Image (tube, rainbow, N blue to C red; front, side, top):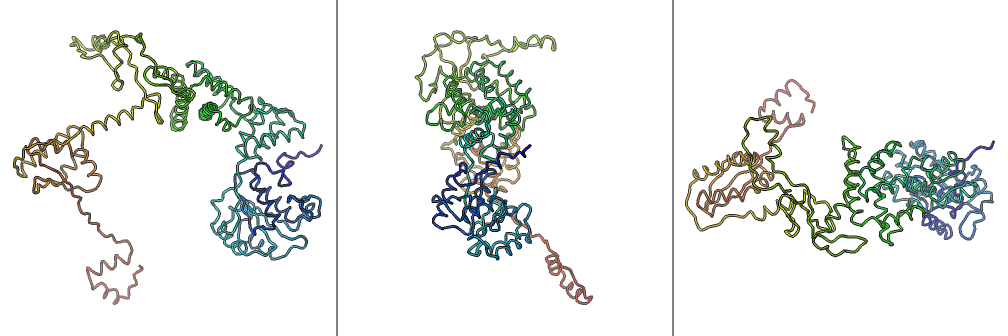
Length: 606
């Protein structure tokens, strides 16, 4: 039985041409070799499994190749290439900085650098995970890295460039490796499957490539795992079962239930997902990605952002036709909010179920809003719909006394009737047009929504409250008049304290404290000065200033009364920290202390 070799090692690139997804790196290195413009030190940085160490080895082999091809590729048959492939080359040295990160290891490396190569032109030193070197090891390496012998080349590789000293970075030629695209990984897996005579489908390979998140080594490891699991048949079903991935069909089925406002079926699908062992947070992030993919399918120019196989792409195209643009934007917003609140929620399942219920009611909200606003669908604004001829009728709203009368009859004897002056209405909803009303007691209030760049189909209570408070601020104005009656400080203090007691009863304790902490002073031209402690108190008082001045002007019959604040001067006491400062402070109070110290030959430790 032959020893099994994992695909990541068996199909490791041996030339620049076979490197996957790093054309900008391999092209630059090949041109540098052709033009004989090799740097003295290279730094390869990027995510794991994207080819940093592989490119370092290919570069080291190609530099010393005796029969270099015209396109700067190693021949693979010369003595230098064969010795490198067999692992016994004396000109190429690899050092794992994760386990050899001390000063002694770097000093040993520096001693080896002094010995010129016995065969070949260069000695190449590959240091992997270089960010693991200690501070002292970096400092010991600096001088050699800056002025190495002309036959020495250093190739450093790391996944965390930010941990490397700037002095090291400035001495290296830096190459940033990108995450490998999903299409490139899937294509490479298909080539390996053909060589190994393994059955596969494109959907399964695309799913492996997406799960790898740009790392080819991770993709090859998952590929080997699924080959063993499925007996050399890598299909969509085996990938989902083995890698514990949520099937796309769940999201398509769930979206159909949401669009048809089927709350019960949506909750049942979510329960089935939980029964299969998936986490709620994983589900909600996948649902948000599903809505994002549907949104991408709305425009032909953004289809390239959809990294799925052709079969799944067709499913997205079909479902995106039945999903309005306004629905997708609202669904994305609600799903993202659930993702943000999931970890802090006490009842996480309820959090997701509540989100699904909200999503199911989005189509109804869109239909209601269509009566008063233009609806956005497929990138075009539809014309406003005509007013509904027949009124929307709901159950009549019962007066409050009819609801609570039976309860009062049980609890309290002979209750007095409660008179309801107006029928109950939602406080924030605008009234329905008269043409749509039949009876005041049998009406439903349809809120009008506004569509804009930052608007939502569901009205935001915080925005309404902010607009309401802003309107109040605009309406608040200073009272003005011609009256300028004289008054003294006592009269002013009387009404000042009366207003302070008034706001205390209203619960404005902070402003009451500011007004009564320091008594106000009456200056010339009816100007009142109040001493405050800091900027925070000034901001609090400014919010009450309009009402306060209006009250004083009316009570004092003087509309020239004004108020200004003055911040109290802060005197900071110097603190004594050290023993020397404490001794000097004692010496200032009692000069004989120095004579006492000298006579008894005391040595104070300060």
